[in-house]
Length: 535
Image (cartoon, rainbow, N blue to C red; front, side, top):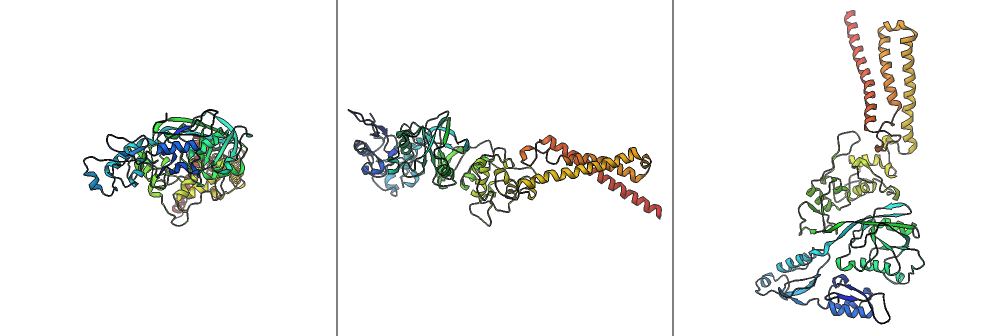
């Protein structure tokens, strides 16, 4: 018994009976009349159309405090009048109205021109549509990892493998004629658009699909997808989403390859809706993910850089930074970035915009760490940061990032103008060769003064050369190591050390520099004494 929820008869027909799945009218996306039940777009068989029309006719049924609307609907308490006639509606001693469908976001309560009481009823009755079990996901195709998101409301699986199949929009004749029976464990690659998410997934499942990948129709935007509670039981296969560029790349290069999907739960949660009219709870910020007008609330994360590298739009990043007090700070050093705060970001390009990776970041480099801007910042995060927030080309952070963009497989000037591997190797070996020559030269001087001709030890100039040569031995050894003692996390060619080895190298460099300074000071004193003696 579906009660107020109508029965849809889909796909399965038995000898003596027909069976189907229950869906709410709001799950069908109905807006005005039950005529939509009979549209080809809905894809219902004849008996399903009749069931839809019968149960969904409850729309616009009268309601009041004693006659409540069913789940997924609210009473607008309009007294049959337009919401603009607020004084008449509010003065009524016996308010009543009509049942209206809840939309997928609470912001629509403010768009409906409701009376104050109707608005309150809408916010209360429709508030539970964002409650679901949330999860995370991983996706790899032929060993290459993609930045995938879990479709909330779909099942969790430890690991599932299958052959990638182009499923189009999962709507229309091309899909109706698509036979997946000959494919072993097909994983449907589906483009966003054309119909509801749960219809895409049920179409994939009904044709033998074991999992689905839905990619965005906007190239550089991630796709956040959720099945509402009334849609969840329609789907038995796991599903993930991708950015548009990743989906198109899979369609072009990887159809027929093996895709591996894993999804896991991070707990049940009701993600509150938010907008300029709907504030988030304390210690939560609004991502303004839907066209910058409204979105979902998120808790402040422990990582300060998340506000800037989470791919929020400017309004969402501003909400995150202001609510969470986020500011990305760097120490003072030659190769350190400038502090990042919300004031550094902008909506529109003013002059040349930073081109961090002009040719785009290749798939194998997208998840490569870029530690100059935080321990958990990846190449793809940095690319989105510079392009989304219009960072100027001459900004210090842009110059620093481009200097090291070879970490992400991008073309750029490189550090010290070493824009290819050959030049970076030359920076390693040229100082090493010259420092070794210097080491042998200083060794000969020390040998000559201390062993070969000890009479030279009595003369001031030879004593000074002896001291300089001894200290130069330490400096030459330090120079000969070049980049070897530097931390390997800095992505400098030849670096295999850590902070301790780098500090030790710097200490021996400073000894050599100090010896030169002291010798110059001593020479200046001798020169002054000689001038006094001459006078």
